[in-house]
Length: 276
Image 1 (cartoon, one colour):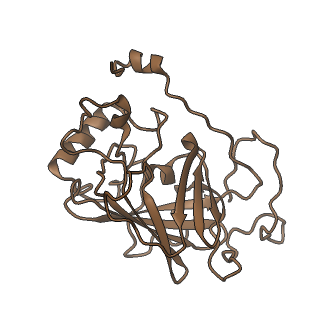
Image 2 (tube, one colour):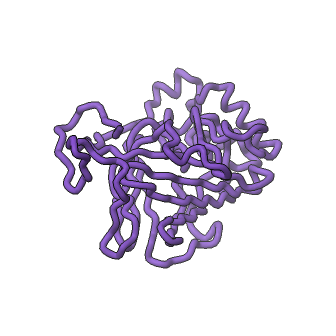
Image 3 (cartoon, one colour):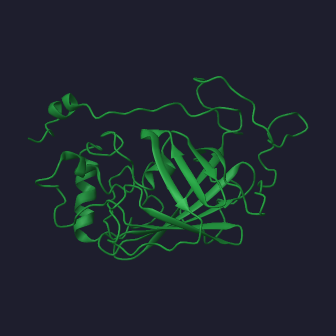
């Protein structure tokens, strides 16, 4: 069943939605394709906790559950010692500095697992990812450019992303993230917003500016989007690891609402985080 959003805008029936004999959206229909024959990821999507028909296949990466990237690993994520300590501190503080609560851009995995919807707009030259949460905007360049070397561009909250096709799978590589400084995890001498940098998930698993993220987008059918994410950050983790998220199409004509989040300085005072 396609998820629906709370009615805050008038519904406008979508064109081109495949229908079953009963008139309902046929989410198992083949994935749509663009004019050049590539899978079309365009649409409004929401996180799905249901792994879908291929969720139990052997050899697949574990699903992210409960906002925890390490939920599917027996021994958790392969943290470096400092990163393990920081994650425990963040979790003990119950997400006090989670960027979502600070009205800051979320981490690259957080956007995939957030309960708010996101929209993908796909063109031959780029894929635009718009999240309702904190009105996040991310671009993936599909024009053949290469990733800039680490440190060559100003760090981005969402990283610098380029994509290439591997059959029907879109492989997206990203680097130059705005991450945690392992030598200053408490952001001493910096604005409090720096405490919201480098949150991979809602448990506070950190990443640094050295992270390279590889995502593999695969539209299984009309209604299901499967994304594998490989995190390679030797400063924060002892080895790369891969997790998986599942998204389901919103096919009832719902639209995202405007989400304007402003960091309230009174809130910072009340929580003792205002910096002079």
